[in-house]
Image (tube, rainbow, N blue to C red; front, side):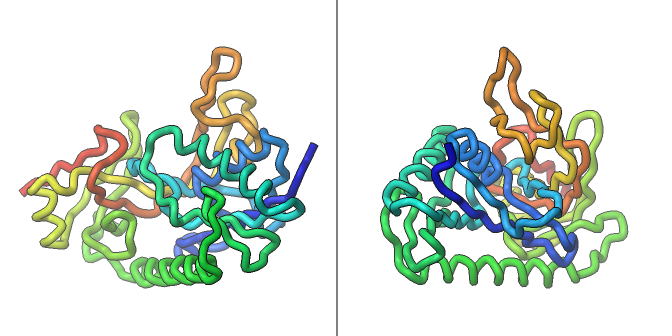
Length: 264
């Protein structure tokens, strides 16, 4: 039985490079799947025929690094918040770092905003986060207008997925998986790499075509949870086709193999 309606707005921070794409992050999709399994009706906006695609960051351990605002309708605020909070708590049990301040629950698109603990937050919190997200998008747009000085390396390298170019690279995929080759141009970043303070890479991509390993349907449309075992078979999201957006240098990559090899 469906108890309530939850709306989540898609957001494309790379509109200038990849226009007309309906994107949600991987962790948001997992949350949506958990909510659906729990009997909640989830609507992703805009509610149109545009295919839903997954924005992912391979090599970064932080969850909800992007803003997530859930709009809840149809039930008492405390009950609605508890439903969503319990699902988010399940995701957090993985032990990853979480930007908790980026998760806001709004009731009936009013001024009633809560954090995922169910605690009321300031009325302007939602507005502030949305303004910061829009500014983030504008800064990325400026970066992507910059033409690489290296013909071999067309893709910008950022620091911690923030819109500041610190180098240029080529992102490729072979039998070993994703890889990068490039040049770090920022002197401070080079020094931090040599000092061991920056150790790895994280690649942002847009998964255009995906397939669930359990039901073989589109991964965005089914309710199977990645990592969960169904009839002795582990659920995996198979990425059939993807766009590689950017590469970022990070302090601690989630995959110990995503390390930087800096040649002097």
